[in-house]
Length: 320
Image 1 (cartoon, helix red, strand yellow):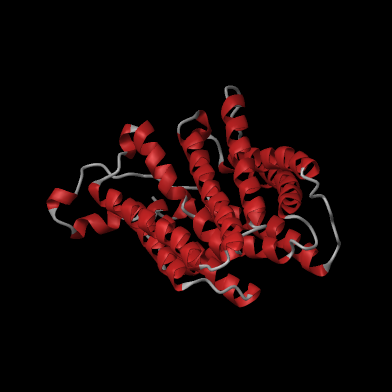
Image 2 (cartoon, helix red, strand yellow):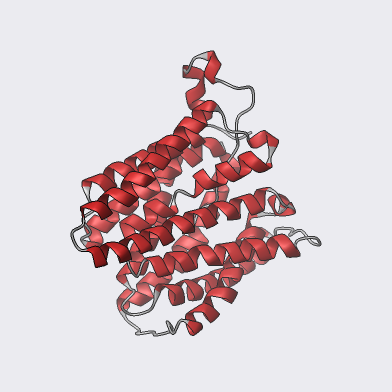
C-alpha cells in the first residue's frame, strides 16, 4: 500500500525539484563552452548506458519484449524533439523563462489524455485549473514582450519562449504516448532507457548538422555535464521512481510543481536574470493551475457536490 507524503518525503521532493530546476540553468551557464544541444546529446548517451547497466546488474528488471518498436521509437523521438526545442530556445530566452514554459507539459498531457482515455476525463475543477494556467501562460508570454522597447530583442525573446512552450507540448505528448501504449506496462528503467537512447541517436546528428559541436573543456562545462548526467538523468530519476513505489503519486506530483518556481529563483541567483513582474505573476498562475489540475483529489472534498465527480483523473507526467 502506498502511503501519504510524510515530512521525509517532502524534504526529498524539495531536493528533487531543486535538482530538476537547475537543468536549464546548467545548460545556459555552460553554453559558451558547448552548445546546449551537444551537451544534451552527450549526457543522454552516457546516462542511457548507466541506466542499462543499473537495470541489468542492480535492479535486475525484467523488460518487456515484443510489440514495443513503435512506442519505443515514438517515445524516444518525442523526448529528443523536446530537448532539441529546449536547447535551441535557450539561445534566445532565459533559463527562468524556459523552465516555466517547459513545465506546462502536464496541462497538455491532461488535455490529450482527456480526449484519448475515458478514465482520464477532466472534472469541472480541473478545467478551471487549466484555464487559470493558460491565463498565466498568456500573461508570462505576451505582457513582458509588449513592455519591451527593443522590437528586435522581443522577436528573439518570444521565439525562445515559444520553443520552450513547444517543448512542454512535446513532453506532454511523450506522456500520452507512454500512457496509451504497451509502454505503460514496462519497468521505469526500460522507458527511461528508450527516452535517453532516442535523444542521443537524434540529438548528436542534429548537433553536427547545426554546426554546434564545439567543445571547450572547462570546469563549468564538465561540472554541467556531470550534474546533468549523474544527478539529473540517473540519480534523480531512480529516487523519483523509488518514491512512486512508496508514496501516493498524486501527492508527489503536486509537490513536483515547486520545480518551475525554483527554476526562476536559480535564474535570478546564479545567472543574474531579472524576470519582469508580469512574468513572475504569470508563472505563479501557471503553477497554481497545475496544482489544481493534478491535486483535484485533495481539493474536491472541500467543494460543493455539483463540482465533484465519481472518477478522478490520474494524469501524471514523468520528470526530467
